[in-house]
Image (cartoon, rainbow, N blue to C red):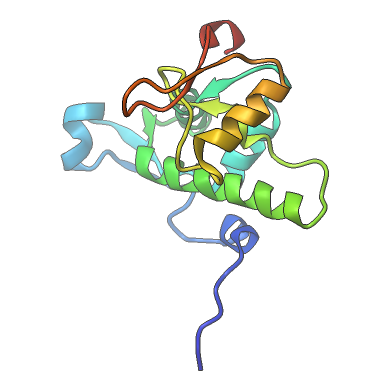
Length: 157
């Protein structure tokens, strides 16, 4: 019998024993993060943080990771799981919009540290750019292979 694929919402709400744990920074990551404790975040915690970002404001992925780590009394938050869960949050929002829901998690307000848009979000940087423009942000076009970015993004963080 073929396995049915989970919805993005099921992935967001799935309980996993490792999510929410604080662990030692793995040896392979110590050159980047040092020694200490690292949070393996929960997808729902990332969703809850993003829901708090008001219209017209932005947050970087690094800021999300820092806030999650501080709340868990850890030195850092795992960049890989945070990125994966951020994508899940974005996919759930799009899934909800396509099902007629009006209020969704504003994932498009999350940008990279240099102000660039996330091409891994649903619809790529183009959809994120369109949503940010609707909220009054100015988007600078791509340069070479670099994705578009929010002009003067620092003022909106």
